[in-house]
Image (cartoon, rainbow, N blue to C red; front, side, top):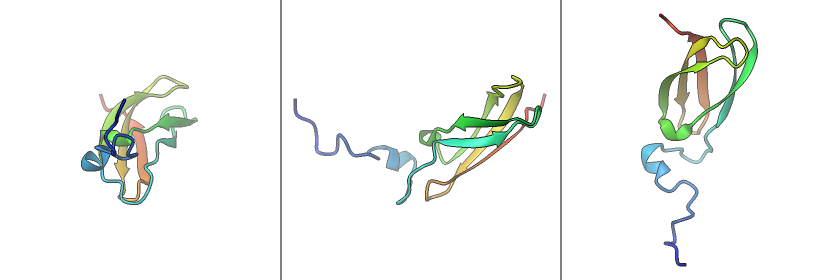
Length: 86
């Protein structure tokens, strides 16, 4: 089986959608639940864009958070969670 020379390129098409520069994108973060105060590790998906907003439930108290993720060009992620507004 023959593969194109860029088939195993680590950033391949991802660079077009999410330019990482010379860094490596963070794929996890530690946040504090705005409801119960517990520290929780969450997974991040750099392939979903440099600015993200989504809803995730706390794995401790099951309350919903509004999660904001903003990636810098070096792959560092700024992550914040807040109570989901009704």
